[in-house]
Length: 154
Image 1: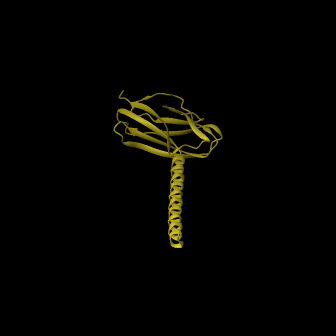
Image 2: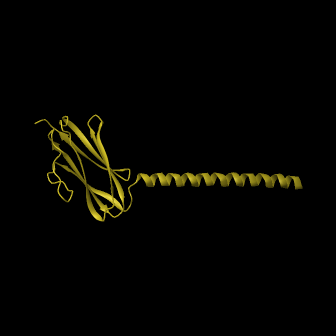
Image 3: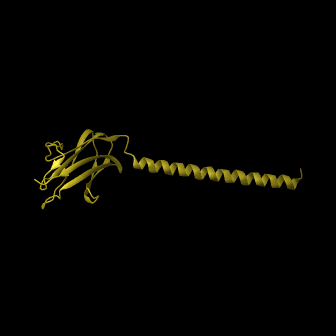
């Protein structure tokens, strides 16, 4: 094999190796980006929602005292989101009407120490329209549970 042929062959091999390394690097970067996105969508391993309660009353412990899924138009509707864990977290409550319209949305930042409850509520001075509603709860941006309830005319 001549010196020129060896130089061409060596150059071709170098180009292939460099292209392959760059491709692997992009693949590893994409995997890391996907992993980060997935981790951001999932609740922290150190905390989880264990229960969602809804009702007409709330106690000093932030737990529902008059549990129900049927409300009158002038009721204040309370929700208790019970969490277990010790990681700081963000809890979001989104209340929607049967047509998908968002009635209310609020966020609380918590730093629990074991089992704790966070209280959310909605009220409407001129009364809720009759129909079906949904409470969606999110923990660190990831869906953590839903509760269905209804407002009925007396």
